[in-house]
Structure formats: C-alpha cells, structure tokens
Amino acid sequence: MAFKLPDLPYSRDALQPHISENTLNYHYGKHHQGYVNKLNAAVEADASLAGKSLEDLIKTQKGGVFNNAAQVWNHTFYWNSMSPNGGGEPTGALGDAIKASFGDYASFKAAFAKAAGGQFGSGWAWLTKDADGTLHIEATSNAGNPMTEGRTPILTCDVWEHAYYLDYQNARGGYVDAFWNLVNWEFAGKNFAG
Ligand code: MN3
Image 1 (cartoon, rainbow, N blue to C red):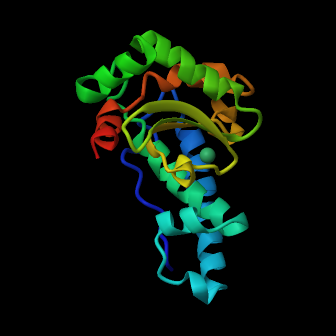
Image 2 (image 1 turned 90 degrees about the vertical axis):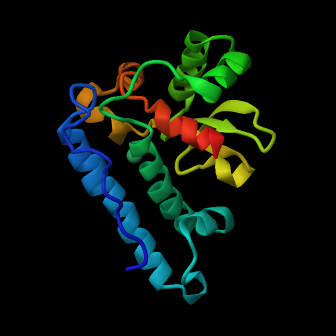
Image 3 (image 1 turned 120 degrees about the vertical axis):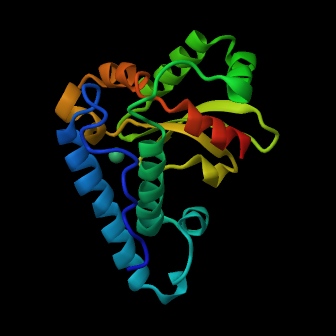
C-alpha cells in the first residue's frame, strides 16, 4: 500500500473529557482510515499517480484523488494540532505574531471560533501564514486545504459533524470551546517557524 494511517500522537482516550475515546475510535479508526483506503485504491487504479507524495497529490489533483489525499493530510495535521497537555496561550514568535495580527489572544480565539462556527456544512478552520509570514484565519469546505492557495497551515480544527456529533451532538460551538483546552501551541509554533 502506498499510504499508511499514521499512528495517533497519543492514546485514543487521551483527549477526554473534551473529546471521547468513542469519537476517536470512529474519527481516527474509521473515517481517517477510510480516506487512506480510498486514496490507496485511487492511486493503484491510476499509474500516473504512482510514487507521488500526499502534498503533490493535494497540489495537483482534483475530484476524488484530491478529496481523499487532502482528508488524509488534514486529519494527521488535526491530530497533531491537539495534545493531552495542550491549551494555554501561544508564546515565542507565534505568540508575538498572533498579538500583532489579531490584537490579543482573546480576539484571535474569537475570530478563529467565528470561522469554525460560520463554515456552512463540512470543513475545516485554519490558522495559516502567507509566503511573507502574514497570519490568516480561514475556513475551507469539505477537504479544502490552504496549501492549494499557497498558504502554510499552522493549526487546524476539523468542523465536520463526525468530529463532534458523538460528544456534542449539533453543538459545534461547545466542541470548538473544548478545542482550546487541547490546542497544541508547540506544534503550531514549529509550523510557523518552518
Ligand atoms: Mn474529520
């Protein structure tokens, strides 16, 4: 198989009580695995895709190949955007950049939560940076990934219903509130610096 489901960076019960083991069993074990399986089937069926990286596929493909490649990448990035030891406020260069771009941490959180809550239907909320280092908050629909627009992902929150329905039912806002208890600023800081 060309692509493998990456190991979670923590155990499936590690994000409780904010995100349950049950959610990770489905979200990681079924949904993320399902995107990996569908991508492998698509790549096997098209010799022109052989040997291409996930990033190559995201930047060059459309339709089902793009959707599954981006969903594989986005979910791995999302798991790393959270940590059982997460939460708190960003420090260092990223903390300074967030303050410079959004005023203060509370204003940043409000703007990110607005993007997450305002995304109609399935999608993702992102903190990204431009080639010149400028920070942006944005939302993408379905499998959308800011790399296709030339921006570098710093942090993401999955706002597909499958990310929160088992724990929060239709209350996306409660799930996004809980996300701040898990947010992995160490990972985000590395993406900002990289
Ligand atoms: Mn998902």
